[in-house]
Length: 556
Image (cartoon, rainbow, N blue to C red; front, side, top):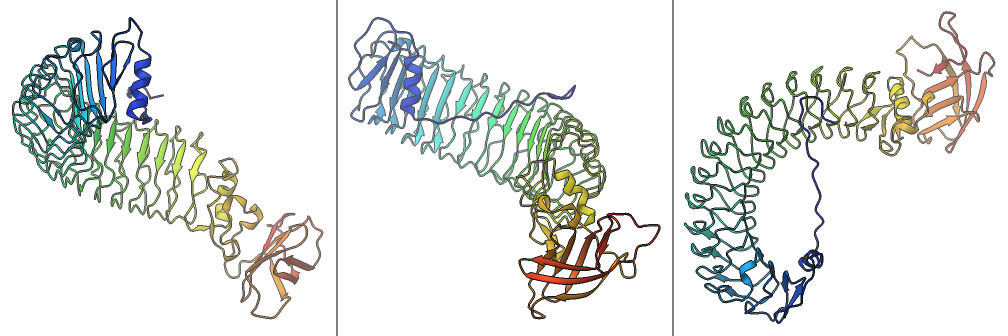
């Protein structure tokens, strides 16, 4: 649930793609029935309202359809063209509201090809062979509200194409071959709310091409070849809510690029070539909830970059070249729920950089160069549920680093050079209360006798620290491994009850961990492992002010 004053962000839905035939049949069969009318040859009729033509032998538009037909679909037919005024002499076409040519061989549209369809509101032509849309092709479609002409080799739009479609609200032109647009092509479309020009070859756009679109709410320019934006390009779009500029080659954003887009909620700038951002570039986006800056070339973020986006909930800056973060970067972003900083070059985090984020639930920091974290790195993040620290250079973590993260149970720690000693004992305890599978690959890099072992499976008594020279509390003498000198593989020996652990490598035995069973113990031990056995003679010196039953002995 969003904190007070923060807008709720709608979840991203997932569409299940099914074939044209199955989808349309399911929709058509749900329609009410009525008196049967003759169905055109090579077509199927459903409920006297939908005509579905999908035979490859169909080369012409049927001469008549049932008089109550509202939907007419041509799917993968052999139709090569729609002649001029093709529907004016077709009985039953006056009530058509939806007309679609899906996966057809359509190559040409005649002048006023769709005249005679006064009620038509939706026209779709996809995956055709059209290379152009003639200026008079849409003549007579005064009630058309949605036009989709996509995934075809269309190279140009002729001036005047939309002169007869003043009520058009949705225009999809994605997946074509357009390299440029006439500057006045959208002039008649004062009611347009959604414009999709994605997946074309647009390298530049006329500065005034968007001027008439004051009602536009969604603009998609993804996956083109744009390298720059004309100054003031988006200024007329005062009602714009979603802007997609991802998948281009933008190297910079001009000053004031979004200054009048105060209604903007989602901004997609990922997969460009941005090297830097002006501190005020998002200053007017008070309603912005989602910002995507992934896969650019950003080396830094200005400290005040998000001070004008108080509603920001989702921020992704993954796959950039960030080396550091300003300490106060997120101080004006109380609504953030997701921050993605993965795949950068961060080597440290400023103390308190994530303070003031009560709504943050996911923080992703994987694939960076973090070598250490301050103890208060995640302090007061009481809503934090997911934290990804995998693929960094962390050897240890401060004790108590997650004490204030009361609902944090999903922390990824794998692919770090963990030093599994006494300083990591607290983390081993904490991991016992998290997802066991998540960190099964969180492996120890050192000491040698624990290298390669999974941290959650290491016993607590094995997580010990070696004292410095002259500070040993216990001393072990007379190590006599069985077998030939110099042939001993790296092994950890232990006694049958697991109270003694002795780590050895081919050169010497390096560390002894001894848990004394009260005050009763033997001086001579025989320890075993898969490498064989070793006899140990131990001399224990217990200092009166430090000794406790069950204490540890370590081998310097």
